[in-house]
Length: 457
Image 1 (cartoon, rainbow, N blue to C red):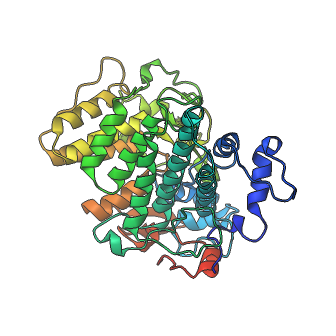
Image 2: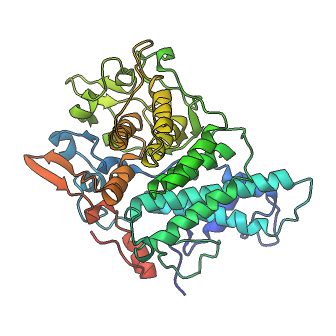
Image 3: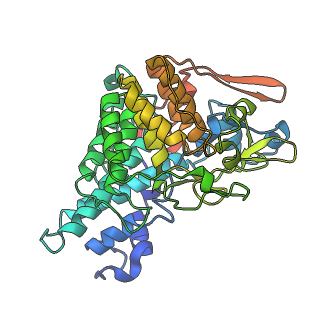
């Protein structure tokens, strides 16, 4: 019998360790003090509310380093201490160089494991009218988080969804907490369908509002479904779920009301945030090392307040990104209403609903322009509108771990032919459209333990 796909649960009783660490004082004491297992709704809820070390981040470090919306100098590159970052920056085939530390794989599968523990354990809870609301909320959160984790793993370790997805490799799907089950890679089709099933099942269980924006609401589930359907090119479903999310209580920030002179104009958990998640730090994300591409910066017009809200000018006149919905230098990677408006706009345009697409796009953009300066966009063709939406996605959703997925899906599904280039130490490094290096290698230790197929690099 093969071992688990995530090393954190292999060989040393990880279950016992994290259960005791998460809510030690509230767990029922067992005769064997080494075996502490969650058994109540309160225990399960505590596991899912661990946003400090488990559910607080989307692990898109490699995606954001690789997406080439920013550069660093040769001097800064040569001074990087982490081989992993150096290799990601220039899209090397061997990223890890033998390192066993791959958070993009380990942490989402840890999230999956927590969710499976909860979902398995809920089967032993007697449902009654007194605990039904709490039970459903906990189950809904576990399903949502598991589907979200599967989706995030797919963005890093699988190729873009495309024709023939049922014959292409996806990811391992762990659907229970038994770490001794053999591991196999599901197809790309099966992997996305499981993520969709999980999130769809969560909709009716989640409440309309949660106490904290770190926990998913029904609107967050609808928004995530719109995001996943957009990623697989199902524009009918993407438009439907975006509309359903936007029918709840969308809120956009008016950039005219922000203090654009401060270091970080956006407050943590601002009203545009639908579900909070961050991206763990990498040195290259931050000023003054991070230097946003000049052509990208210049694509914001003078009346576009994002140019001031999103960027700070460095001493060398380069610009770095500061527009995080975190109130700090830490990058934001959760769900926000601006992304849902852009999903609505793209899906509607692709479906030929030009009026609906323009309404969504104009509703968003007029909140980003200097008061009185915005003029509603009008376009002649569906193709022109789609091109405009794609450009706005890049500008609005910058540094959120989204661009890498957009490049992959637009190349694979729309023939966009987006190539990436960087200049380093006098040479040009290039990543061609649909290059195998758009898919990160599965960690070496996983291949050794499971014999699953490695991604081609």
